[in-house]
Amino acid sequence: MGTIEGGCLSFIFIRIECIEDILVWRKDLADTINAVNAKIGMTDKFWEYRSFKEQGLDIIPQIHLGEKASAMERAGIRTIRGDINRDIIARNAIIDAARAAYERAKEELAEVMAIPATVVKAFKSEIIDVIRKVAERNNSRLSLPIVKGKFIGAVSDRASLQDKAKMEAYVQSKGWTTFDEVQAERKATQAEYEKLGKSRGDMSARMDYLEKLLGFHEQYEPYQKVNAEYWKLKKAEEKNGKPLGFFKKSQAEEYKRKHQTELNTYKIYRDTLKSMIVEPDKKINPKAWTKELDGLKESYRKTERPLSDAIVDLAKMEVLNHNKHDLERMLQNERSERNRTHTRNRDQIL
Image (cartoon, rainbow, N blue to C red; front, side, top):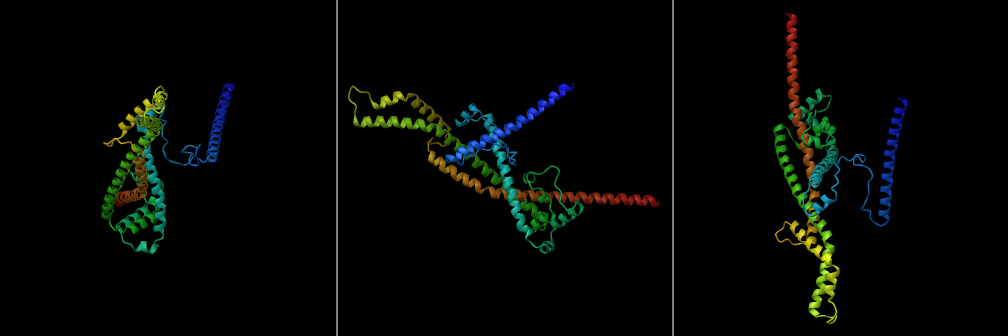
């Protein structure tokens, strides 16, 4: 029995050492590739050996497509694996927005903390009254719902949502005095959030479409050049006659014979690319696609801040509304306890 246990332990230690070796090998490989890329000027190609988790990133890694699925996706054919990665990209966009919301929250905190305490104290609001009453009963903090709301869950620094002083200053900065005002702004902010979400979704879909066209065009371009060279020779001969003499072969026909496979492949790629284009004219225009894609990326980037602001505001409004209902529950419990105490005291007297 002792021998078996010792063998098991040795196996475990070997496995652990192998894992550590693999991590070292991964790091050495990434460092070597990055060093070579730096020498040849490919500074934009950086290899990272650590996992997202090890880097402290909460984004979701995409799955490997594989050769067949990659080819189908490039041809504009949706695959299950491609759909999974598109879903992951959409989820990561929300995570990125939440991260931006956290950074915005920190900036906002610095602004509201600069408001003098005396000003906040003098501001009369039923919302601030709720904040203070809940804080008195909850260790000087606001409460969060057990099941986090859609927007509360998107804010990583949830401790700031429970901070009494920060939330009072936030209400002060908004100028709210009643929960009716909160509900009205929540409705408007929710509509703006949904509008931004739809706009970003439309832009994301269009960018995905353009990137697929450009990616497939990159594969198509070499064959297009071969076809262009063939027609250049053919038109020159049609214009100038047979410059090589009657008994010599045509340059265009000789070129065609040597590049028949590429010319056939050109036709297949051209037809496939045109089938991917949704515009009625089916025009292959990579310059226009690139220009539109760059414009969409810039527009998409500009929506990040408004989206993060909307997430932060909606999260804070979720917290305020939850605490309003939570205070009602606390007060009801306190009334019930007082009634029970009064009943006990009365029974003892009798």
